[in-house]
Image (cartoon, rainbow, N blue to C red; front, side, top):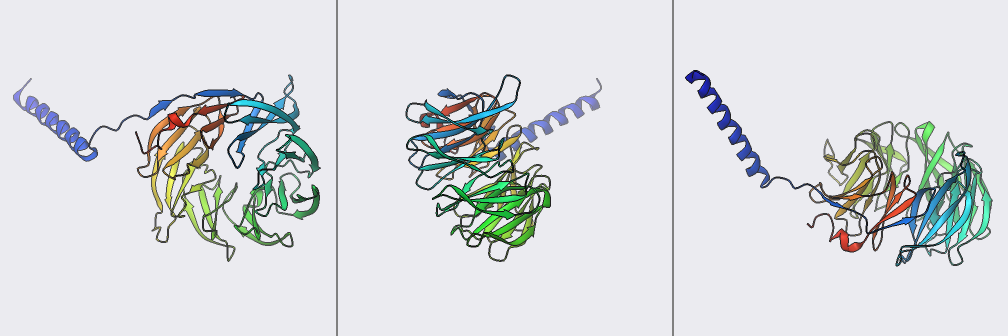
Length: 389
């Protein structure tokens, strides 16, 4: 080798070392890999669990479970009632086929479960764990939502383009509101005077006056809007547009879109901090989370950072302190725990097959649809949040 070539090699090595030193000085130390944590318990519920709801006192976890016959036909489902102190299934309450995303009233005394397979809602008395009524709504419902006062239940009928309104005192249908195509999910204003309904195939949100149960506005948003989310101050409705790769911001006072935030591919319903200044949006197709500035001065590009998580993030949840964001990664069989201060994934929880949702109480619960189970991560394994090592 001639001296000139040797000199070039030495220069390259020095440059490489300089770059390495620069990286170490910039970052301090090499970034540690997330801690991997397995469940402390698994609770078999069978079938295809979709949703978990905690009672107000946290003592019970209600899990909707769809069931199939041996030839893969829909059959009546159940709601598994779990004692969170013992992780034992107390009972399985029979409901209709393919129960999906229900809601509890504020007192936790009634659970309203939409049965997608037969167009009904099962009304469950949580004291006796029995079905009080089965109300026909039609329309292959996926959601049923109790209004803040606990007097009505709103059930979007996806296949009939009707929003059914139930009276909770009588468990009867009192109104059917005609909507645009494919009504999907609804959120109420803080005082319950307005309901905001996404109509997927119309690429819009319809605003309903709940005193008269009539549509008072139709607000165009992005492509294929899914479940809307109200901000903590009640002044904005954030609408994730699954095929628009964006989130529309709707002013709740004027029913006008005031902004469109570009995020990743396939955004899911976002979560926000208590101050309403930060929002996190999981991007189902990208395997990322967009952290967004939604404060008074968001700037030209409100997306502050993009955080890599697992495959097909399908659900997001903040802990009570707001320091940890949990992202359910359906195709990775994991839950990512992100420190909201740093945007770093510091813990990875391994779940059962195809986790669908995460529920937080005295422990962390993963609803594992493919595994027919609930994975439990005890508080002692969670630490003090993802920002603590």
